[in-house]
Length: 145
Image (cartoon, rainbow, N blue to C red; front, side, top):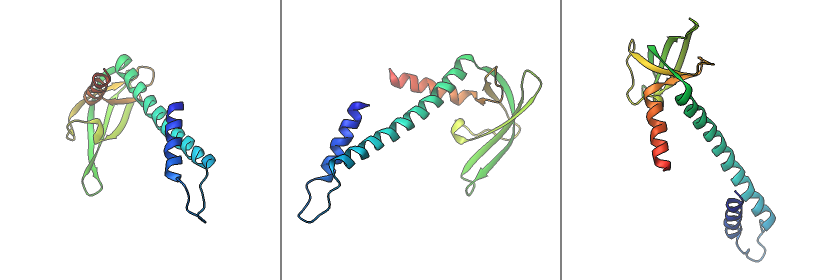
């Protein structure tokens, strides 16, 4: 992180450059403040993405698989983006209804089709379509090695 702030600060300072006579200068302090702001923004984005990844990785480790019925496939934005709705029965007997966009499916299921969902045993309301989630995390793990 410190190296990133240093690099961003040098970049901001070089962007500021040497002023022409009569031209206003951004100043080194402001350049470093901009660099720190850029790095803080990047860090926040990284932390949020990492949190989501860890939750999905934990879902793969401890989750349970259950069948779910696709109840509706609707298309948004001029029929280009499919949105899939499904329902399934939790072990407690409660009917759980969820929906997601196309990013959670390698192939968009049809209405009435049975899909597999992975859910947290402690919180059945948190569930994801199983096949694509496993493939996504497996590919991410292979690319890190």
